Every structure is written in C-alpha cells, then in structure tokens.
Amino acid sequence: MILVTGATGTVGNEVVKQLQATGQKFRAMVRSPEKAEVLRKAGVDVVLGDFDRRETYREVLAGVQKLFLLSFWRPQLAEHETAFINAARDAGVQHVVLLSSLGAVFEPGVTLGKIHRIGELALEISGMEWTFLRPNSYMTNFFGNLGSIKGQGMVYGAGRNAKIAVVDPRDVAAVAVKALTEPGHAGKAYALTGPEAVDDVAMTQKMANAIGKALQFVDVPPEAAKAAMVGMGMGEWLASSILEFFQPVGIEGGGKVTGDVQKVLGRPPRSFDDWARDFSGAFR
Image (cartoon, rainbow, N blue to C red; front, side):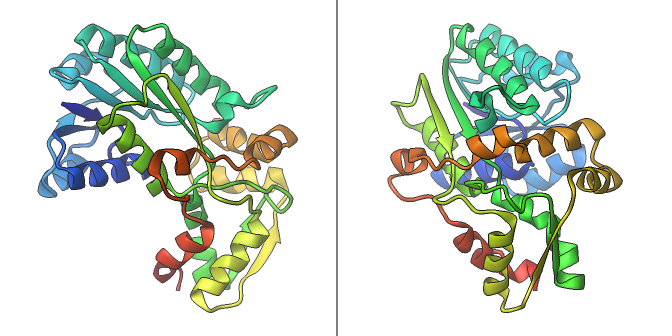
C-alpha cells in the first residue's frame, strides 16, 4: 500500500492521478472532508488525516509500505515532517519519497530550503529507505497572473533579473510515481528542473505567444510584491521566504539546469512553452 499526503495540492494531486493510471493500490491523505469526498467520487481510497493532529497518524499509516510525503509550506513544516517520518518508521513503512526543495542544497541557504533539509536529515537517520525529490520553482506559479492577464494584459512580478529553471509539477509527480513503483531509487536525491532557465519577462512572452495576445511585464519591487502576496491572503512568513529565491543565492542555485528528470523518466522535462500551450485556455 502506498500513502500519498498532500493529495489535493499542486504536486500531490498529480501523483494521485498518475498512480491511478498505473493501477497501483494507494491511499490519499487529506484534511478536508469536502476535498475527501471529491477524491472518493473520482474512485480514490481516502483517509482523513492532519499533520497538526498526531493522533490521526496511526490510522493513516496502517498497512502502508511506501509513503509519498508532502507537507505544506509553513513555519511548522520541519516539525510536521519529522513527526510523520517517526510515525511512519514506527508503523513499519519501508520507503519514503520526500518532496523537498531545490533550496535544500543552496548555500548559504534560504529559509524554505533549510527547513526541508531538517526533514531530509530526519529521514536519513530513520532506518527507512528514502528518495529526495528537490524540485525547482513550479511553472504553475504563473497561474498567479491569471487575473491580471485576463483583465489587463499585464504580468506583475519581482523576478525580472531572476532566471529560474522552472519545472512542470506533472514531471515532478511522474518522478515520484517512478520512485514509488519501481526499484533503483532508494538513497537517491533528484534535483528536478525544467530544460531552460527563464525569467518573468521570458515567461510573459511565451504565454503571450501561446494565447495570441500581447502581454506586458511590470517589474515590482520586492517589498511591494510582499505586500501584494500578504494582501491576497498569504502569510507574511511565507511571502518573505518565497522572495528569498529572488535574492542572489536563490537566483544562482535556481538557474541551474539538471538532467535528473531525463534520467528518471527517459524523456526531456517539459518546457515552459509546453506548459503555456497546455494551459493557454485558462489565460484567454
């Protein structure tokens, strides 16, 4: 039995869909009864669980041999990952595929990377087999521009000079499914990127090409970007942590292209042009 946590998130939802396609037996952990019902209607075996409620861990992990561990970005992330890893070990889980972050290997480091590295270290000493997935920034983050593109033909961002090798979450999920269902991935750490480093200006133009509409990029100072993210409901801690990736250490590390998606999947990673074409309908 495979357990998928974070099953309704950007990557977790893709892992669920791709596991369904393989016919593998798995269970999805979700916190919300409403979201659980949506997955059940799609034929998914669902269990209610909450990282904040450790009393739920035993039932969630019962009978599980392999675990896809995805915890949400929040100050308690390291605490949640470590506690769940310990519970998985006690429940007899054999292999954990941990969704970490490319920032976990940045030096001198960024906040989200340092927090994920704590979870990695806990898994390394747990005695269970492990695989680390360290994705770069997701192409789907561009959905944050949906309203301004449709309403104004504008893209606002703080990354004019930050070239990042953004990755398609579908590719990250595909690597996760390989690690969960095929041998040969234990003890491996995969740095998952797209095929090229692109900045906000380039992504804006690529989306403009995909939808056949001129778009304009507007550079936003970091403090204004933070205020906008907080204004949209994002916590101040998370907004500040995300903006660290646009600082020199984040730009340098995030701009590197790796071959790990190709190595695991046997095909090149999807480009932002591919992603823009696939989701262009949402932006028109």
